[in-house]
Length: 379
Image (cartoon, rainbow, N blue to C red; front, side, top):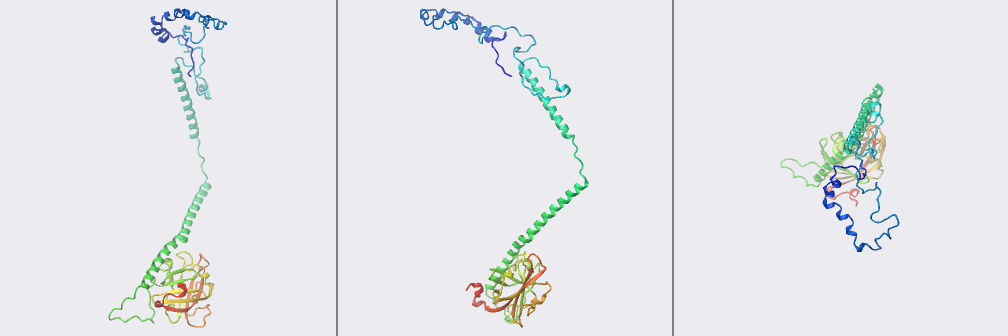
């Protein structure tokens, strides 16, 4: 620790106060012996001691206490091997840590200069701090983790499996309810746009040697091939219709499937039976339960527009009840043959336990040359 030290210490080797710089002829006292200040200009009452002669300031020859600062007199020679400043206590700061045995004892103060004592104190602090760290690490390293029982390991394994299965189920639900709709909507939009372009294009000219197609004979389509568009004006929806009810080739692509073997819109009599998903994969028929008597359904083909009017339905029936797609559907209340339409889908939502049925009867057939019907044109 740095401390103020009086300049009266014994410093035989110090040149500033004992060497030629201040002890030579240039500082031999001749300049300061008082002769310079003994003229008449300094003999007045101002400097004769009357102003400062109260005993505390007895002129310039007033004696100064021997131990005052600034009086340079030789001190006693320090002891050989003793402390540098014997009149000052050892105030070097150091960590004092509790210890056991030899570590608890204070080391013998190091003799010598101040720098040597500081180095010694730093060495003692480092040793004590290091030993403390070694003791802490040895205590931490000596702990042994208790071995877990088989029940704890099994419970942890079951918990991890449950979390993994839960994450897989969440991903599957997201795939079913969201991603399948994204994929099906894209496929359905592409099929519908293709059909609209096909319907608007002029019919290709007949090739020589081949008979013209018979308008009274319905065209037969390959499974999965789109041939019509269904409009649900009340719901603001329209979807392409493809041949067949294959789940992978038709329904899962967001298309409405036509039951093979049932009637077509252009037939003079028959039941145009359709099926589609109610949930997931585009869910075209999700809201057909909102259709009521008098609502319109329009089917567009290359030949024209066919408008049906909803007459009723069956809220819930067995999936094996195929009588609803007969030429005269059971449960619809029709007395005889006619031009009918039947929409089928699963119910309740997100299940396939039962089937929801909606019936309709054709009320208008319009060629394409006459434009769209009022049900979809808004006229």
